Every structure is written in C-alpha cells, then in structure tokens.
Image (cartoon, rainbow, N blue to C red; front, side, top):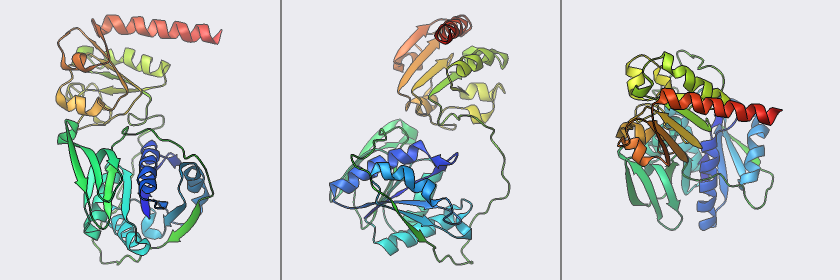
Length: 329
C-alpha cells in the first residue's frame, strides 16, 4: 500500500496535494499497490468533503487521523501520528506535497520511522528502487538519485507534475485512525493566529506581476497592482523591494520568500539574481520587462520587453482594459 498526505487550503484540497496524488498513483500502479490518502482532523464531520475529490484521482481509501491533537497543525505530533499509521497499515511508501508544512511533516515522519526521505522531487519513477530527480541548493541544482528502504518517503515540488484524474472513479472508503500520542512528547503549540487577508496568494495565483528595483518606489507598484487586478493575479516583488520597504516580506518571490508556480510570471524591473530565479523558475511562462537586455532574468525568460517599466506597463494595462471592455460589450 502507498500513502499520500493531502493538505486542505481554503476548505478544499490544495493544488500541491492533487499533484502529489497524481504522482503517487503512478507509483502505486507501477508496483500494483493500492493508493490511500492521509488527512488530519479533530473528528470525521467533514470526511465526505475530503473523500469526494479524491475519488476522481484513483484513491481507494482515506485515512483520517483524528483526535484533539489533530485539530491544529503540530509537526511533532502529526509526524508521530503518520509513523503510527505507517506501522498500522504496513505501507511501503509515503508521498506528500513539498510545501513548508509538507516537508516538515514528512521529515518528522521519516525520523520517527527511521526511513529515508527525499524532499523536493520533480520526478519519481516506480520500481523496486525508486529513481528520482530532486531540487538541491535551493533549486539551482538537479540531483538524480535512487531511493530504497522498507518505507520510501518523498515530497513533490510544486508544479512538477500536472494533476491528472484517474481513468475510472469509485467511492473512497473513509477509515478513522486515532493515534496513541503520549502526553510527555515534547511538541510545539499554537500561540497566536494572524489572518493573512482574503483573496488569492502568491503560491496559488495563476498570474503573478512582480516588481524590483526598476519600479523605483512603493508608489510605482500601483501600475502592477492594477494589472494584477485586471488579470486576476497577485503582486509580488524582489528582495530589493522588500529591503527598501516598498512591499512586505510576504510579497517576496525568491529563495527566502515564496516559490511560485504561476501560469504567467511578469517580472518588472527585476534583474533576476539566482535567489530570485529559484522562486520563479516554477512558472510556466515568464515575461521580463527591463531596460537591461543583459539582465539574467531577461536571458532566462520566455519573452522579454526591453524598455522602462513605467512606459511599458501603462500601455499593457490600457490594452488589457480595452480588450476586457470590448469583450463585455
């Protein structure tokens, strides 16, 4: 049996979870094993909401880890709970999304079981030994490796695969599992919750319009915000914009910020140092707007406009707005 950890986001399964499920299904089919999902909840009240979408992706059963300790994320307790489930089910593999939470959780599960863990994989092939390719050095290196063990554990990098529904669907059996967690186990606890606001995030936005040194000021981001609103996207920035106080750190795209996997990334006035490239390299299409034709991001982009962002963006905004008005009339 192969297990895949799924995460909830805004009341539904995250995109990274569906990618992980698709990858896990190929691994399970390659070794003729059943695919079971793993989720966490205080009780089974919303089990059907989780099981329904999984039925389209070839998942045979959903193991819902329940109990008071499962109500709020806790890597130590949740990692121990997964380790108990692995032992309970005799699972041969564990797959999860390479989100911040996913990598942390799977690392704890691997430590508890004493099994090998390969993080941030972009490709995993089934077999007696799994062959895989994973990101190293913050994403600037690719490593080919083999993974063997009684239980093989991997996390899948965001955007590595396309979520693909199974050829056939069937009802997902929900199985409640309450781990036996000792009260003496040292663990972290939630001290405060701060809302990040509503709307799409950098990690989930289909379009990200990002600005760097070339934007010039906090006020210069007004045009980026207008374009992002028109195309249903989010606004990001480089580290320079954060360091200058133009944008909050939560908007930063890069190695020390958010790694995106947008359909379109529009980089405005960003030179594109390695640290920034690590954050945006997962985008399907990159458009760079820069006055410097030799800028690293210009050379790596799919498309580039050589010009001042203050001249280019207003023209783009005007054209997009005109098309939307024409389509609405």
